Every structure is written in C-alpha cells, then in structure tokens.
Length: 201
Image: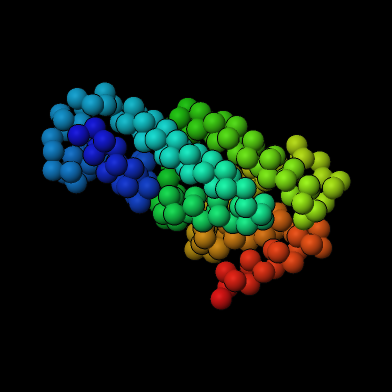
C-alpha cells in the first residue's frame, strides 16, 4: 500500500504540483481513506519528502546507467536530457517552483544532492570529451561543470522562462545546444550538428 501511495502521489504532484494536491485528493484518487495514508506517512511534508527522494534516487540510478555505457560524451548528455524529461513529464504544473516555495527545506536538500550527483557526472563527461578531442583542451572544468548545473537549474524558473513562451522540452534542447557549442572543438561540432539534425528529422 505504501508503494501504491508513493506512486500515485508522485504522478499527482508532477501533474498538478506539490501545493495543489491535498491528502483528500490523493485518498480519493486511490479510493482509500486519509487514515490509511496517515498510517504510512505522518503528514504531507513527510510524503513530499519521500516522493522527492524516491524520484531523485530513480533519476540518479538512470543517469548512472547512461554514464556507464560510456557513449560519446555529447550523445551521453542528450540521452540524459531525454531520460530526465521522460521522468519529469514536462513539468506542466511547475512542481519544482511549488517545492521551492512551499517546502524550501526539502527543495534545498534535493538541490544539494542533485548538485553532488550531477557535478561528478558532468566533470567526468568533460574530461572524456577533452580526451577524445571533441571538447576544447583549455576548459576550466570546475567552472564549466558548475555553470552547466546553474543553468540547468535556473531555466526551470518560470518567472524567467514562462512555459507559454519556453516549453520545457524546447528550452532544455536549446540550453544543451548553447552549453555544448561553447565547449566543443570543430570535431565535436560535427557530432553535435549530426545529433541536432537527426532530432529535427
């Protein structure tokens, strides 16, 4: 039952937002009593925390699996982007914004964990790209990895990037291209252009 509650809560939070979904909504959706939910989670904050940690773990494991394939580093970043979009369901309801506004402690914890996982992944990606001659040799790896994290986090700010102007899928594509064009060599640019052209076909 706990797994079912977590799964349904995850779907509802992602589609409707963390603030918007009440415990009554969740109970009605699963056709159980609120009392049953409270027997597994003492309050909504605890449920939100478990949902976000569960999502974080699933996404981290998926990213680790993609990195373990050791594909071309440019292709690897596009595969990670596709995987993350699949799990975040386009963020129509801006769950990250609601999490940040109404559950700031949980948001900060997840952001820190996200940074630690992503930092390792991006640093390895950059080093491999340099070794393969598709990223520039003179990159400041620590700077590039952090600016990439900062950008990927901040493009989700819907005050800066309103969904009606910047659909999340298009926004992530454009941000990834922007990041890569700044660090690739001419050899890397050919690979990048091939991937972009195949995505447009």
